[in-house]
Every structure is written in C-alpha cells, then in structure tokens.
Length: 95
Image (cartoon, rainbow, N blue to C red; front, side, top):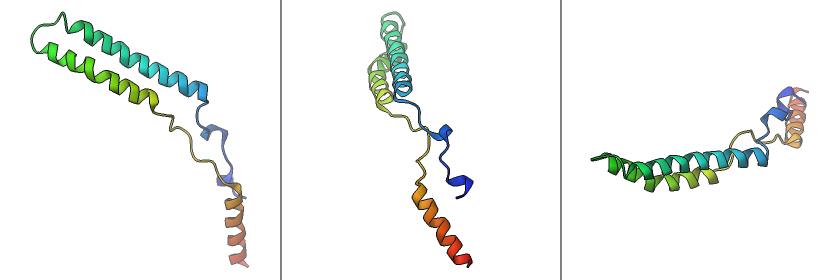
C-alpha cells in the first residue's frame, strides 16, 4: 500500500458544528450589512439612495445562499479496497 492511499485526518471536512457556525456567521454578517443599507437609504442624498436600496433588497438573497452553501473543504475519502486492487494489478504486471 502506498503512502498516497492513506486517508489523512487533515483532509477531513469541518465538523457539522463548525460548518454551521461558519454559515451562521456569514448570514449574520450579510444581514448586518443589509440593515446598514436599509438605514442609510433614509439618510443619504441623491443616487446613493438607489445604491443602498439595491443592497437592502439583494443582500437577503445573498445571505440565504451563503448560509445554505455547505462546506466544500476536505477531499473525497480514499477507498482502500480500490487502492489495494490497483497495487495488486501493478504487482501482477511486474511479474
């Protein structure tokens, strides 16, 4: 068995609790920015109202998409059976 076929603990994805915490932070940050945009709509002059108004309308969608996006960190687990079969085939060819 080669060293490359061993599953590394560092390649595992984040725990569900850590993933949930990261997504909640992203959602809270986006919604906080949205609240700032919503308040600024009433206090800024001119075309800035449009910019902050669009931010207040679009940011909830972005916040939900970020919150629902799962973690893509980590790698696929190594299938030890497939690695052993490949090694056996390579050994067979060498003979």
